[in-house]
Length: 120
Image 1 (cartoon, rainbow, N blue to C red):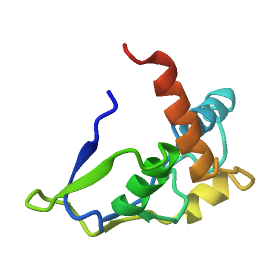
Image 2: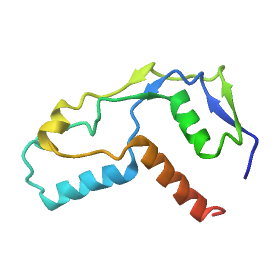
Image 3: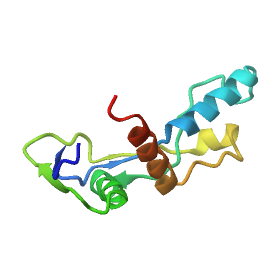
Image 4: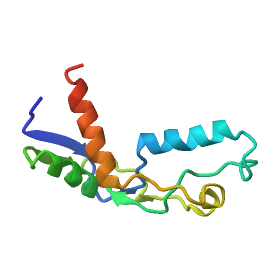
């Protein structure tokens, strides 16, 4: 909608682990293809052991739009836990060679997708 400002709750310092949806789909597809896959007898985290702050992510997204909008941080709203990043040790035992999509590529592809279907 070409808004000049986007509101985001919190200060942006909270660190989260981000997962490209197609990467998750690839993992699920591998599991479906091999339902007896070794290592899945107990739950595992789909994890990269890497996090990025909400502010860093917002700025990466903003850069894809040539910073055509400003970000208004609603600091009165809760941010949740300061850091939510999961260890990847169990994941790597099962998916040794899995390569996650680079964050910048996932963002670019996601933006392109939503631009292609908007307005809904």
